[in-house]
Length: 517
Image 1: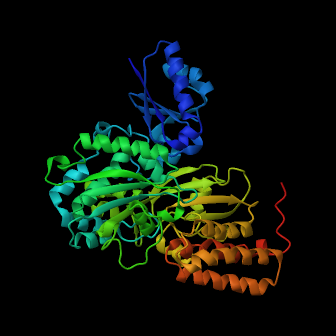
Image 2: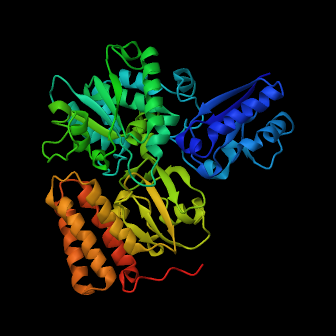
Image 3: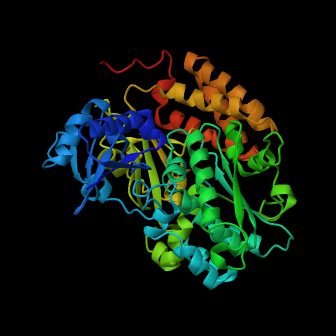
């Protein structure tokens, strides 16, 4: 009998030794003359338990972790024996942190071989594109509209409305673009999909192509994601061989093909119009709107631009129906959101759940508080341009409108946790500095305002005419928010003003003393 083991090849798992663990287990198996097949999967997203090793049993998979190379011999002995081991986590699906999730978008992540189309099909893949072909373009669009799916890249614009606009725009050529330039701090959901379940992204993009009449797609991946780019390339090739891409998708008359493009590391290229310029071979610079990309996008043609999580959510909508997806969530935030917990947090990882869970539950209960064991002082939600929320706002439900009402952003669903040693004045200054460094330079508020912002914050920290400089900073943030061409300058005021509003003591002179160790 062949022993079947599952070890992630996800970049997050590789960073903590998954490759070395796989090699050590192979060596241990060879030494014992045990036939062992090691399937390299994506990560389940429980990163504090990586590298996590799973073994196939008649009753389902058993998990062990975090496993080090030195554990290989004893682990293999346990697997061949009664299964008892200090690193045993029990049946994978029964791990409490995983069991309490609602996994729709990430249902296959960590389960399937990401480079095997056959494995994807065996776990329910490709059903959605078949249904899409039977429905036809207009019905596909309406299904997505009815689902209530909003763009998961940060803006939260209704996905179906965007698709409908492109579908109704007459043109000889249309494009589908996946924005995989995941540059926000504390976010890794896009990478996890591309490295753990790339075919769900391919299927979602193919369905979008059928819906709007586009025959060509691009996945724009940031250069810092070489593992994602390699896995996507392999999956696209497999999809062509298997009929999911090409001139006759699933033996139909519809054609759709796609390719990977790797960016050059500019944060601003995560903004859709800068991304278009980069794809066209130009320097990534923000374009003024209108025209919208839906009317005049890549090479002047109508273009659907969504992020990875948006496209990856489409197959479950087409498979189960828009009403099924809409049943999850609250208010205008429907479906599930893969929330990424990072920073100084005990249980860091990806937690997919329906909209509506509170920030406090995410940080204290699901995240387990800080890794340092110190009190949580602030959390930043929505990337480096997201607002800092104090504990007083932990009752905020994870919902686009609820966060906006409190001057916050959900963004891409990243939550970065800070304990009571954080200096919030430095965090506010970092936001201005980040904007200054990453600005494309096209608009004055972002280009000049961010540099002036650093100078004003420095004066406030030094105690120089604090009242006047605080008023100046507020006025500068207002100019950035409403005068910038894109969200880079427009969102920079969120972390600055939230830090100033909720943590004013850190801006006093002398600087706040660090909490006693």
